[in-house]
Image (cartoon, rainbow, N blue to C red; front, side, top):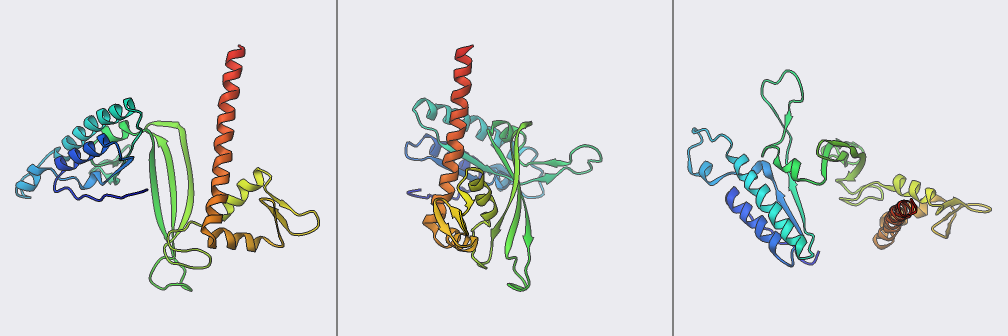
Length: 250
């Protein structure tokens, strides 16, 4: 990104107008709202906490849903495709004995609007040899799906370092196993003719130097991961083209 703009609206209606305004801007490609659960309407701020305000945040989120849908449609007509991300939390319904007790603040409109929903479950990973009090990594399980369309779902897990340890820096993910398996699948990670390994056309006596280079050399690591992504995307394009040829032949 060339620039990051952080704004802190005072109430929900102001946040809705800001998000809509950014989506209409020609030079804005990504808008993140953090979070739907924290939106507070102006009427709720003005009134005492003793006074009930039923459905206030849901009403504001409904306006957000309608206004952003129109803004995204207008941007598409102009040849722009901005990305809109909502961050939300999971809460639980009170007194539910049967069925799913989970719900999300803001009602059901955002899940219906979303083209992709990413849900993360984080768990601290402790290692007393590195730190007695702080987790060394966050073990994250994730589920990606379209709302109520499980056929389009995918899931997985990753570990993100919260303390620099071993070869990992803060924020890095321990993805060596994933990277190596994809490289093996594409024939880029093989046993050498006599000894060692041939990885991406380079010879290594053992796997350890490649793993260290993957994490320590940021440019090299990014190029390796981008190589895998490009191959996956090209495979998808070839599949679509083959299907199209088959349809034309029929």
